[in-house]
Image (tube, rainbow, N blue to C red):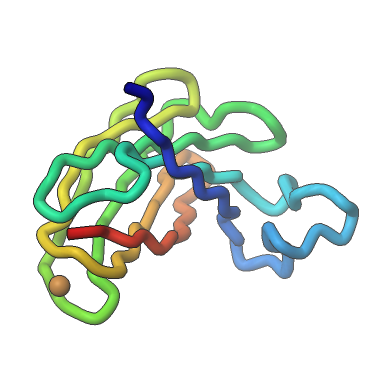
Length: 130
Ligand SMILES: [Cu+2]
């Protein structure tokens, strides 16, 4: 059986006017920051079941290596405390971790990337099923 993988692509904004959806030059605004791709297995996470998170980071087409990546899960309209997923680099620019959502609904995954150059963060919404 093939696992379906959800893919979400977003950009870290670095406080600039550039964003993923505003490609004035016809390309993604790679100069503005790191491109972040988040995959979950399963594609739609299930409450109380293990979910694998794979975050891939690139900058100017190159993998962002040896960053300290953290992922925090927060339910959109409810406080579930701190749900941190520990992320480990398992290939150049690829960071992997395991976590679980205690409840179904709309969640926000906050992704923070710490490097010598500084810390950048972004977030993505995830739907979690029963
Ligand atoms: Cu909740």
